[in-house]
Length: 212
Image 1: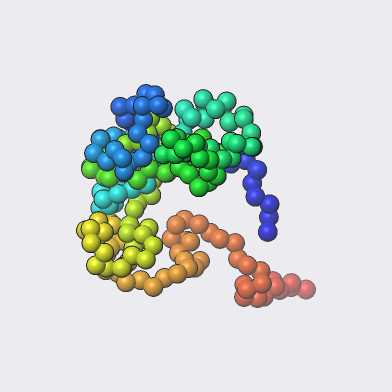
Image 2: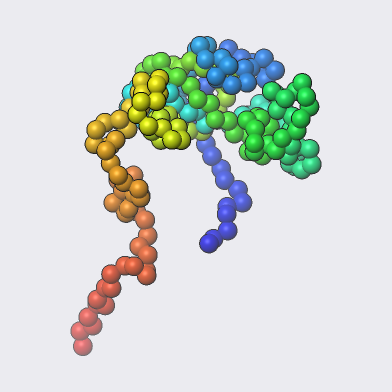
């Protein structure tokens, strides 16, 4: 197996607009602030990538917490010692420390956030949503739709309100009935990829004939 990349460079696809300018004033989770409106603004070149998103009730915003990164020495401080075991916001009253990967704490090795928001409307290159736990201007790295059949472990039809959550094209009969587990090469080509052929499984080729 090749070694993992030591450095990965990502470019934001857009940013969020919210009412918050200070970290200490920003709600800690969308579930604790579900009704407040916000807006996702994607770069114009990605506007077509929002096609179909209006069919989902919820989406995940994958963000880079730039202000936490800047306040933490712009990522220069090593994560060692107690920084690996912060005191989560909800345990401030006890002072209990927990491994950072067992928390949603914003100060973490890559300063990434996962926000589940409710889609209100999609228009052009903008998505209006409710459920705010991000600072104004927070860079967004990706958007992924929430679908109960994929995202709720053990989900089965008849699970109350989850049955009413719209899951976009995933709930079309042909998609919902699919038993597909692996994409196969044809599936990868449908995404625009051209995966290399495994030399051990590729059919033999006849070498070119040399005319004498």
